[in-house]
Length: 457
Image 1 (cartoon, rainbow, N blue to C red):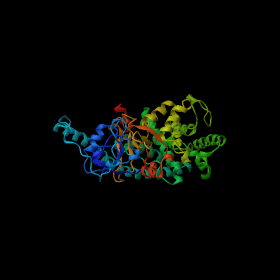
Image 2: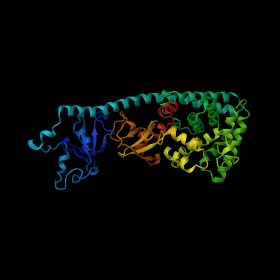
Image 3: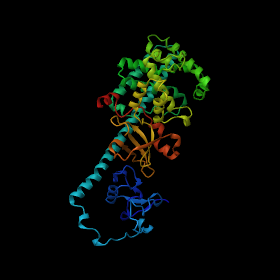
Image 4: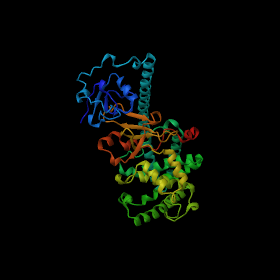
């Protein structure tokens, strides 16, 4: 049954209601929900400038023990409609003791207003974030153009390709150290041009590797060498045709093994022709498909034989590939990808780097699609470093105005509002997927810089 108008006098615990009005006209996280607490019922009864609606089919029966006693006969269905006269109470029904004092009224009003003020502040902050996000995205598109030129120059053996890459990673390092920019969500996979996927992947891996390097205590000089290696880690793939690269995610095991044996060697040979190319970065290119137990490619090296920088990049590279498989139906959600690295790769990947990546991205990395305890769906926009289980979420509510995005900082909400599951993009309806627009919300940059996070802990 659809929503029907509800008279405020008919409010009770167990009703599934919808509030029609501005998101800032009430203190609740969303505009539609089931009433489960007496304090919520009291708040609803005191709301002004809103219209209330109820969905009877989604509501608990009125004879439920949580709402009425078994002896009380259920009221007629008509009482839920706003155009019906409310049932009058006897004047003596309410005792003087139940009438709130002026102090209680003031405290109740303060309780209602404070959450709304917080919602308004969060909304304004989100609008500022949107504007800053656009600015950062414009800058990032410029970085991508530089990345293309850098790779083309290195493939051609031109030294300026290395200088351009060093400039790019220097800018990324500055970005990670700047708290204002590191709060922005970088749209690292937002292009619809498949020819750009190589460069998005390269920049993603370089950015994430640098985040891990910062967390593990690398100096700026070493971290930039790490990022150069991460940026060029797959450059040997450019010896393959575009058609062959499109098949990379669908290769049979034997073909994939040969591919992983060949392109690291090709890449290392390519960059070694560039004067002063850091040997640490060459090791990353040659070893990023090796594994700690010797099962990797191309040389079957084991733990101590693999460089620290390569150990970092192999973790980040696999994470990015798990999240962004060429076949979207085979892509893992960010939480699932992190779980896979932590649980399934203990023998093959450096766990210090895995734990650091989880630490930086949070249990629910930016871009994670999640289901809340209210049964609402949302997308994580940034991580709270002091409480990684309580990120900032953009919530989908079909009854909310598109001009008033619902933004919840779970760290500021009641503990009863929690994330209960992560969701794969393929499991969303087209309507919700379009509203949350996951590809444009994906980000690897949390709400604080890694340096600020280290200080806060």
